[in-house]
Image (cartoon, rainbow, N blue to C red; front, top):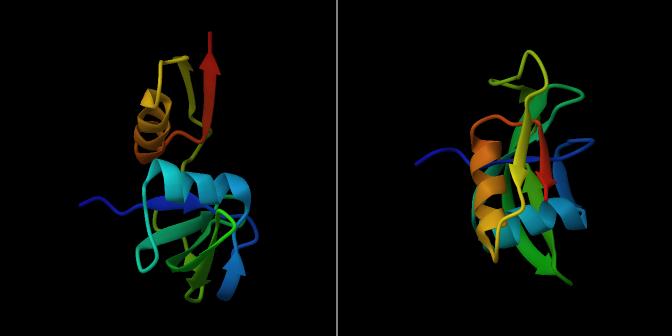
Length: 110
């Protein structure tokens, strides 16, 4: 199974409550739950850390991160993914797949 990755600004060791966008991606798009793990990455500092969801509070994920280390995978340039707006929950799958393929920016057009 592929490593699940999510963008986390200001990545640091310890517990923290993630913002709504990252929480939505982890909980709704990737369908992770309490006890599931992922790799959080901060593209500005090029660091990454293993994280585990320890609670869900008002729709936001509370996670515990290990000590960050230099990212094992970095994009040498920005990758833009432009896709037409899809029906229903297909957009979730498009965002998930584009992220797994390395897209750094996703634009939905109509």
